[in-house]
Length: 292
Image (cartoon, rainbow, N blue to C red; front, side):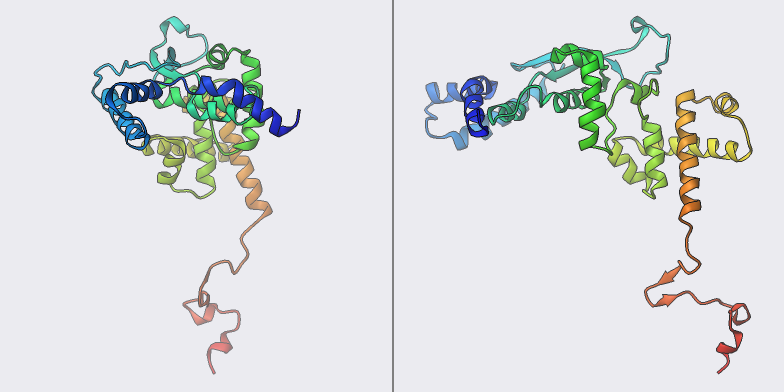
């Protein structure tokens, strides 16, 4: 089966499913009972506005649309660590979409469910995080119907290759556990690249004060390293997680190595009109050149 045939087959199979939306139910109601036949351009924005108003004025934000589900996620603002049972963790109810309309359109256009799994998993993680919750990979696996190992392989493989600078809100990254790159390490890496705190905050969707705290912690670790303090002692002194201290140390050592390999040239301070001149002529390499 060639690409065109496969796309046509997907369109036949999945088009009806993709049209099962609350928006289409309301549109059918307007056409059937209120004379909106042939007025889709008016009906669609009206339906969207009505649903937005219902969502806005629903005190509990509990309006559920077809294809959505409620899920219990970890509260992103809690303190979390190894050995803490889930029963003692603060949880957050989040509302998730099993499939978005955009994802259904992609299927109609010929993409496979398996090929879209990485994007769906990432979307679920971000969707929950936007509501204040953090999903585990086990959560994502249960929602999508695959093993959590499959989800982990996709997110750390093909998805990371396509989005190398993105840090997904996974348990390890948010709560600084496991082998995931933490948000702390990402903030410091961007800081070392020269980005301002405001820009880092926007990229990571983090409060500037939190980003500043990450950078301050990194500088504490760097100062202790310069004073030849052992990593185990640094963990004790700073109160940071061992994994975080390890990542900070790796970032610090890498930045020092790059600075040694690529030092600034002697004349790197230049203006558009040319290199800066010394204020004192006696400090010039050729004092006589200043006395015509």
